[in-house]
Image (cartoon, rainbow, N blue to C red; front, top):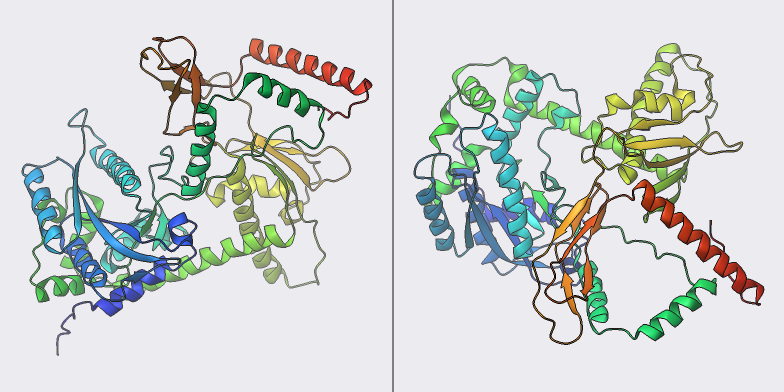
Length: 535
């Protein structure tokens, strides 16, 4: 029997894989205006990441370059993370960076900072720290796309581990080809935030404030705004987008082709001996099992990867159908970004032609899955929680919001309920399908969410007052990005700020001030002015 000899990956094959990911719609300013872009490569020094770095260097030196949705990639920077968990890791990281520079790529070595050694969950902590360091580094590089070198063998091992853990079909989809960077939900400009044009608007406001607006003119404008109905009470907040996306262009290539690529081009790579110890991690054990035993055909790579592809296709179809349901039925009626509330009107049940019992049951199960996926999308608008609930946890919500899909006759009237930090409250009136979604009240058993902005003592102002800005936005309550600029009156005073929900006393003062403002507007209205009502 002839043994198949793996072929090196050609630049044309790799270009197709990369551009298939980068040519998807991209909302970044650089992509919209066709600016040259920088991409980042996560390089461990293993054969897979070295092969990916080599292929990127070949594409960047070609005449065509690398095309994206709105521009061209002109630069790639390899980021080497030194985990500092084994002797000699620092020297190895420097050697990897040297190999990247030989390929005419940029190279950065970043080291993890451990505060405590020998912790039980070292692997999980290393993963979190690695992603956060990669995210911050990409933000500094203005690189919105970060490439990983996961390949078909990694996908195969991941699906086997998911099978052993008892995952359903959604878990068997395993490694996606693209996703937002994990473990960075509180880092502005890294996770789903930080578009360039949003930053420019903030700079314009900051520059305007620093010019020192005339206080008398400011009071006059505020007075006019209180009686002018054409001026909105509060400008709607912008919804953030952007952040760093992880891409995996090698998922359709086997590891032996990556090895062949490095060997054919005489590339040097570095082996981590801990990856071959089957007693160290579950992945190492699965890798040893695959190499050392002849598995049944149903557990071999072709069958497992085909199963994974079917699982991804099914999950994607359900998510697409849930999206169409929300759009087609115009479920979203009003979203208030300033307070994070959502008003929805769900579709009423429709009568169907009689079907067989088996067909009706199968259709109902599918509709419940789609309804659960739609509810999860609605929760994402309002929830302060980082992780959305799995569909299996939304059965109760489906029963309440889609009573026609209940398995048994349940004629309970609509009642408020909570799910994943969201309060679902039925609207008052004769519309049983209309609901209001808001953040659940803060429980008394937990501390309220707050953010502290620390500052240092300032020196004497150069002219009049001085300004203090916290450029890095901070996430508050898992929903709002806060960025503060303030004017300091007392020279030499320490500067700080805090954000938290109002206390009972503060809320009482706020209501009294609101009533006073309302009475002032009413008095001005009696003098012949138009005024906007306060609710």
